[in-house]
Length: 494
Image 1 (cartoon, rainbow, N blue to C red):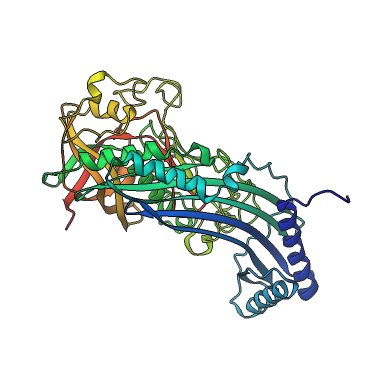
Image 2 (image 1 turned 45 degrees about the vertical axis):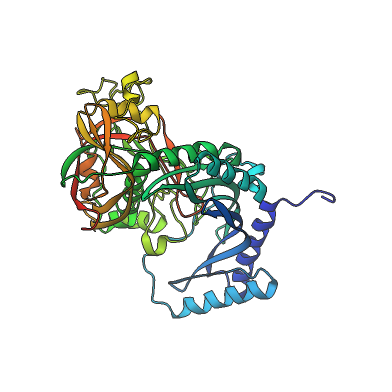
């Protein structure tokens, strides 16, 4: 209609349809084609030495084409959206398809199907300017109280459209914001991170205070011998558990290749553990790279493994349906959950799936911790506990370690998911429910499923924290955890 504005989603959907039509014109109706068009706008404000040193912004349009022709499959992408650029992309992919090996496992295209509307997204986040990000950085730096700080604040907006030659199409938009910062006191570091679907929800001052308190509390660490210790893992450390479980455990390709620990229908985890991948819980896209509608997928329900993530290829290999987890790296790494949440509550009041109370004190922490839980061992450890939720878990630990973060984690055995890595950004000894001293970083070697196995998860906090990944649109969310045992195998140097 004349005078009707063209929406961004309509523009990219039209572009996707044009590429599908072009494949048909150049290769005939025997060619099966699927196209994803992403228009992305991202902006990043970096700071170091407590001052902003870089503001960058990027805007791009990427067209990804996959073609199946004469039993062979090829894919390619480009960012030239002129008529000549699109034709060059199509010709390049068609040429590749003629020379690639046969693909007998081709699962076919996603048939036309209804796709849910995308969740609400925040225009203010999509169009956030450098002044808004600078204000958040200033709040972080000021709240650190003179400590040297560094980090970033980022905002982004994606408009995505999909079309294929089976007549299926979909479109959606998403916006997100994230902040990650570090404060340093002498040789000790403290960090704080946050992911949100609204830039207005980022708390720069709160993150700065938390990072600084952690750094001050981590000063003058003592050595502890390696061994198995009970632990409280804060949300940043829990995020590493979720990321590795997603990549190596709930990955449909690894499951099909028998390289995953996952055994659906088996109680592999403590009853307090429920894992849900839910891209639509916040601003996200209602379809994947193959156009399959996305939905919440319960991977673990009250300790019992229920599912793994699939794209069309891994699903076809096992004779099941795709769960909507195709993504740009899936051809190499397989389909993975990328919006994974550890539900902080066998929440139906700490009950199991039958409604019976959880035995042995397992479940969710009390909503208000006792006052003593907020008392630490003195000025040297003030600030080690970042929030009352974690304090409640610490208060019920007789002797163990409080772990802020895990990093440099590497998988040693994918099948049992044995991971080695280091603690980082704060490690403290807990005695009689109180943080008493900072501890030098330790190396660990631990099977993540074993650490979360039946009887191993003593408590979950009530407050979930959503943390950013390095990749836009990916996040990990969970509360603090109190675990019965964690295997520390040496100092940070070995």
